[in-house]
Image 1 (cartoon, rainbow, N blue to C red):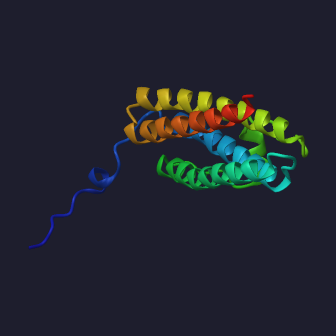
Image 2 (image 1 turned 45 degrees about the horizontal axis):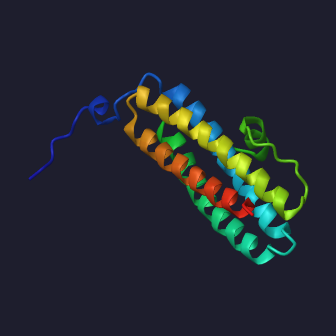
Length: 163
C-alpha cells in the first residue's frame, strides 16, 4: 500500500506568527543558560575553603544539568526557524548574567550563583508566558521545566548559606 503524498504546505509545521519574536526571546534564555553554566563550572574549578568538597560536587551537578539543557534550548530555537548563537561574543551580547567575578570566596560564589539562578528563573518564566500566549506548548513546557530547574538550584544554593 502506497502512502499518498501531501502537498508541501500541508507537510510543514503550522506557522505561529509570533515565532520570530519567541525565538529571539529564547535565544536570550540560551545565552543566559550558557553563561550560568560557564560561571558555575568556573566556580567548580576555583572553589576553596572548608566547604570545598560539598560545593565542588554541587557546582559540578549544576553545571552538568545546565550544559545538557542549553543544547535542548538551542535546538528549540532552530526548530522555531532561527539560528542559535554562533559565537561567544553573541552569548555575551544576549546574556543578562554578569560574568566578571574572578574567583571570589566560596560564600560569594554561592551568592552569585543564587542571584543568577533567580534571574534566569524570572527570564524563563517570562518567555514561558510568551510561548503560552503564542500557543506554542512545546516551548512553554520546556521553559516551565527550566524555571523549575533554576528554582531548585536556587533553593539548594540558598540552603548552603543558612547557618
